[in-house]
Image (cartoon, rainbow, N blue to C red):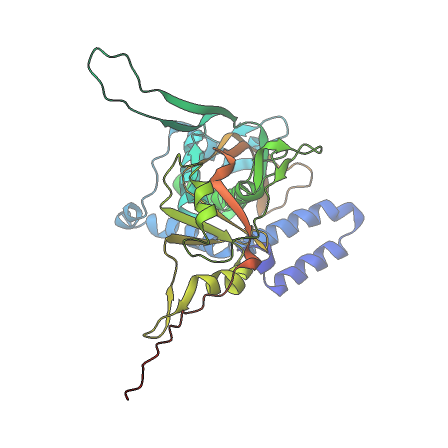
Length: 382
């Protein structure tokens, strides 16, 4: 659930709490507001995890069915700190989230996010990762011949610890009091949710200065402000026909160096309804609507994609990684009774192999598919 999807009742309570708080109690009111919002957003998850823990405590078969993870010693030590966050996390004592948790969380994020399944995730315990686009040839010849095949690669080191992604997490006491396996279950769920939106935004339109280089940006061109320049938006993509998509497919092949047999179309939900579906689907002669695309096109609809712009892209040519994820108590405000706010900060980065991995186009130029009509003239008999 997003904050904008909260009920009006919760929004009104938060507004009233902040409006009525005296100046010397504003900090505590902010903390209470965060708790109220978070518990409303995760109410179902909190109830689910607490109920699962209660049932698992008396039903061994059910506990096995949950598939709880076997925690390493580092993970157990990390979650042990949640028993008393005020002692475990202070401004002077920051703990590192074990890499096992990050790697598994990123696996969960990829499975849950249609967009991030297109991304290669670097392991969490590395600070540099190789990004390469390779091409080459193998040459047949006699055994005594010198090696004639030359393999070349454009190799770039991706500095994963370059930018910082911050997520705010609330751990209710009702969760912290559970056994470690269920604290892990809840923590990974909310960490995955918090990271997913940030990683998607970075993948799509990260500016390269404060975050990754998104596929809507050019890799090698930087503006005076230090941000990567936005890609040119094509206005010539109007149909999903072989001729209409020829320039897109040619670009994605990177001048014929890679085979493109499937396209991923990323668009805003509003544009999907107004432009993409009318272009992609047409009436069938037998009734109903069918996909009229000649090539496999998978739509990925996401609110993080700006309205009016869409992108065709391919899978497996964008690398993203995180390193050194740290958590500490949010010590700018007073602690509250029923929940504690912690901050997860990780260094992360990402970029595509080359600029041809994605083609950005003006989605409003798409034309509605019209069923071709063939007129047959039958000559009259004399």
